[in-house]
Image (cartoon, rainbow, N blue to C red; front, side, top):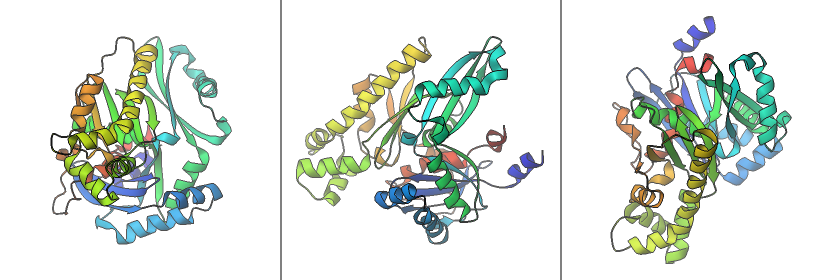
Length: 353
């Protein structure tokens, strides 16, 4: 009980670590007011070298720089929840008889050994009972490399932070989308387009399945630059100002981005088939929600709607968040904070249950 009260008394900040940067945000969930936020860039090569060597100095120094020099507003406590890149995690739902709950950990171990292509000794494995009936339990299993989780936690602890929870980034995104949809929990395909990768998930009361593809905002820019023979700066302008919308550059930009977008669409189609065939044969997905720092491409929602024959929209959950007197992030950079915001709005009950 003391732990539960202690968590309620301390505000929580969300820290999102990706190969290209760190984002942090703190929110007052009672008023949905942003208390503080900030970001710093990371060099993917240096980060990987740091994680491989076991020396987290590069990451811990970046967190220190972020917290001391790059915060707008304030971060109210040292209690944080963190995300790990979804592409580095494994998630799966299993259904077991209710009477098997007493042997739940053994059931999880057996299931994980069957589908995760990494020895369990090298993973941090967590689980959550997401549905319960008289006859069955539905359990969500998540796993991430221990080396990765321990490095992230160690880098935070080097900055006197207390890490309360680590979860896949897509779970944080789903939490914020669910809040923005006022808890309607419509069965949804989430497409989170980051700088280097795109994460895809089926959200139906909980995360049902995930997948990733190595395409993102940076590769979009590079494809436009190479295809249209322009500088990276000009390519970025074409991406965020013209994009796939009707205009003089539409055909050229669309042709440049089509190979990347087709890879994402192919992954989405596969995960939808998996959901219908393996998880919920009667499930009807209601919408596609597109988020992330790479989603700032005009016309992207319409493109996915046409390709997947399902309503798709670029989400704007920021309407539920009040920045108060704080200057807001530049519009094109605001989507980068969606994972950190999803982490920051977690309920303490989700941590201690």
